[in-house]
Image (cartoon, rainbow, N blue to C red; front, side, top):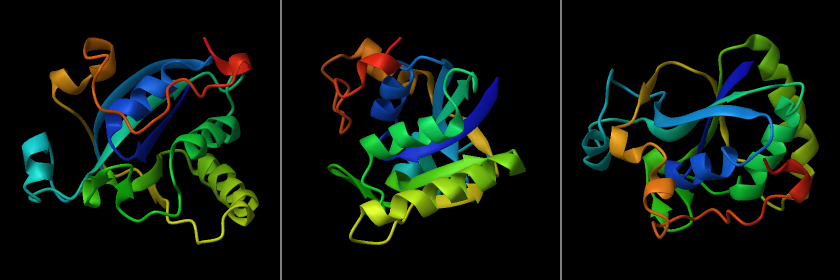
Length: 165
């Protein structure tokens, strides 16, 4: 089992998308790589915390290798957009790939190098070693399962059939 943290705008849709993929074993939503410990959603909204809304993903790399996981990530984000995805605008909505395992960095860098030619503008996805991931409040966990009509910038129906659970 491997772990990666991805930030792709509002974390509700990112989590809802990834938990539908084969090989994804567990997800949670939280706040990553910011200026304080244990931030709250209110801290982000009031700009007291500089974290990104993110989705922690545990996955079976024999079923869903990191490169394929990143391919899915790039399906649901605009990697050329700075601090914005869909209607969500601000630092907390930046895109990012946050890793712990140094071996993952090489895979991430190779993926970005191969993918950048698919875009007319530079890729602005933050790539950083994870420096603190904090679970979001309980009401954010599995939000779109609890609130099926909730806002989501991610097209949850755009998962290739071969990758659906």
